[in-house]
Length: 406
Ligand code: AMP
Ligand code: ZN
Ligand code: ZN
Image (spheres, rainbow, N blue to C red):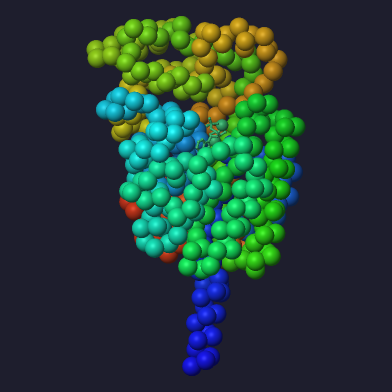
């Protein structure tokens, strides 16, 4: 009897069983696939060698932060999950979603589909997010058990320490699915371009944060039991200052209901009856490095069509070019010779490719897999967590091909 009690107690405090089905999903914003060859990253490289690495991970179109994070979380293309851009206009709501508008970011009406932390919580698996797009909204009336309001100023090491504290919770309260998000590499890539000393140092910074996580896991005896999934949302392309196309010259603003202007995509919602004239005007006047598309003309491989939130007209520059407003033209002219970094372009472009490294009991040690698209990760995470996936665009057979089932 006493022995049985002891065994029960041991099972209750022992992390073993639960942790083997656990995931820490790490997102390194803007970490291009090519960076792994280009820059020192000792911890990431060691993880790749002793775990599984993909040749690259393809983002969904558009290769931007919010659409891609939410595709990883839901296994859905943006047209289905609703976050079709970093900023989204819905003609039915007649309002605009933006990442810095808390009243919209926390409003579940924007977030369609079922993100992995909701799938987990609904099936009794605790989730925790140290930042993740969507985690601040009660999607299907459900939030992660533990979550944070986004604050980019919090140091990377502090984020890791908070995650380690979650792992110190008693088993009943401990999350089995955790996210960690770092924006340093994206920030440096935008400001200085992907081929810069600043990107090299940002990579060392996130590499160091991951080393800190690993040493915390080792101290707790969890390193070989937790599944670490290192991802990025998209890559980064070098854009010279002179590769700037003034776009608002070519748009007749009197004829539009709403326009969302970013450097890599301009989404135009014309007033009724004005689509064709706006389209013809743009088609005739745009320089060769930018293309206007009717929604129906977009490449089918982008799967960027079946949503009222996708604009009837889109202007998209070639990779390596930016769209700017007239009011910023003079400033860009004074920066001739400088380069910056942008993303959002065609998800097949080499510069836009992201990374995936898996490490832990679910992943075959020392293996390399071919490139795959990020919507596949949702099924994989559900399998590892031992929960049933919601309907999604991924292929369940892909997840089986990656898992170490022995
Ligand atoms: P992008 O404009 O696509 O380069 O987006 C990157 C930026 O998104 C980061 O630098 C952050 O400022 C912001 N961001 C990332 N995650 C979140 C979040 N969960 N909530 C609000 N903003 C975020
Ligand atoms: Zn990003
Ligand atoms: Zn970015």
